Length: 481
Image 1 (cartoon, one colour):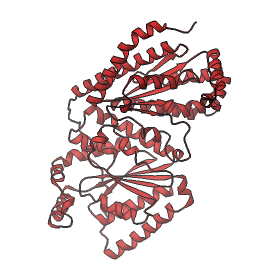
Image 2 (image 1 turned 45 degrees about the vertical axis):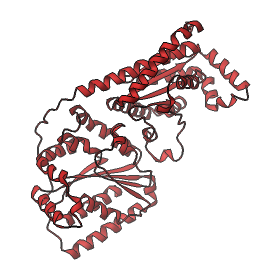
Image 3 (image 1 turned 120 degrees about the vertical axis):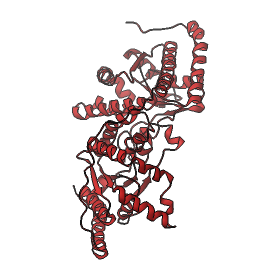
Image 4 (image 1 turned 30 degrees about the vertical axis):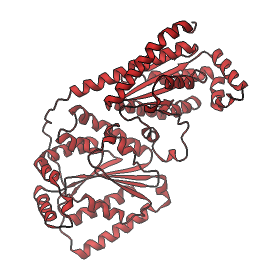
């Protein structure tokens, strides 16, 4: 079948209208800031990927567009989970980003050259599908375009590029390998595109043989997808019903142990901190890393437990990330973006003082997000944590449970202490009205997100000393496992 073509005259007739439509939609996108657009431009070598992106940047306002060709991961990139580097480059609401191959680049290269690990390939596809569906639900329109040509056209173009000193650099060793194994590459690509073609982010296959046809086709796809993204964002804004969550069994809290005197507490604390210090200084820890997430009611003692952990660590080895209400910048990205930013490299530790579980706790209880968003968050959180543990990061999660009476006692004590008064504000007092609702939400959260490699530890926190020791012991046991 001959490649589709369009005459230069027809191209010139259609171009002004298309450019006007694209610019108008880009302005609406930037003004409304209701969604973002992530464009994956993939394709066979010499199919016109660079030329297409360059032309689109001429048509649009480049100030609000990012372009990333990340290539193979560097040694630094490999210290983080596979999708970490793409999370760093996602567009904020109101912006558009072009990714050359994007999260498909490394996967396709690996599969084309090594078909032995089918299980790894299956998991890679699963990660990609999970990512794209989550991005779309979080307001990122994912547009996937695959440019292709026949083998004869590809060989001709590569030869022309190599013939000139000004363009020979564009033909890489990888391009030559793919051209040489054209049929093999096409078989793998077809399989990949079929496996990752889904309603939320379908693939758009465009023949790149004819330049004018390619440009008009890609421009129209982009136009339609931006319009669809804006429409979906507006529909979501309208569809924000609030429903009351159903009843859930109360949270089961371990019984409080006998109180410790100061001497015994200090002795056990020193022993556990020494145990932790030795564990994180072992050479094997450099092959891993650790993520600790702390949740619990206000005044449950999260900060105190965290300080007892960090006292045993080298300050260069960890970071503590305090999580509060998202900033305007953070709200312009997908929900998990602000947590991906602080994921530790191998050999390091990140401690989250409150975490991604805010979506199914405070945002759920206080009706700060649509029901559909917090209900789907459980599965997205499980997938997020699975990606961390697959990379070798150790994940431990703590719910510090403080009784309603003990919480009130601590609030009053802080109010009476000038040095601690800053720890309690009007919002903390207001949250006491929702104490029972938080317990219900926490119970469901733990039930639905507890995993063998990302365990929840429910800690009785009415006794601060016992709680701190319990947390330290759990951290040590996680490392030892």
